[in-house]
Length: 240
Image 1 (spheres, rainbow, N blue to C red):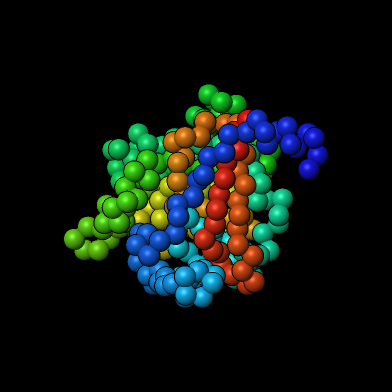
Image 2 (image 1 turned 45 degrees about the horizontal axis):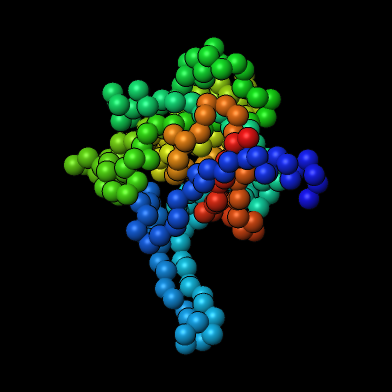
């Protein structure tokens, strides 16, 4: 390790933006439950191994471009340099307090830039919705009404289109809910707008309220699943 890198890491505070994957982690209803079992134990076999079965979009996870884009890059083909990005955190909690179906919009980014300056040339944009406070109560996190429709905040299509056109250095978006789109969406316009452009998303982020609006760098440990549409991911934020 170079002296410069060692110095930077030595000064860095690390914030884990991931939830541990468990069998009872709240999942988008389209997906099968996570199944986990102990296969070998140190006491019986001399070594410890568990067997896991889960859909790719479980827990804190990456949505690869291929998730909604035929022929777009799969998770193993996300360029490595796009997995280490400066992060800006757009706080939309006031919107969500008034409306569980609230979306992050271009106006939120413009207001952010007025206060904190332009977005970095290459970065990830994370939306802090406050929804993570519900994650340990699956019913509250998914927030289904009597008809089964989910209600949770997300990104607007207007914002994803704005970022692509006006802030093309944004390579990833993420948030602290189960979907890039609002829970009630049927046609997933934010996914459809964002992912086929070759960019990626991150869902079920943790601890976004511990990040400053600017100044963090995210290291996204996207799994190298050959041909995968995404997968559970460890996301670490470095604060220097």
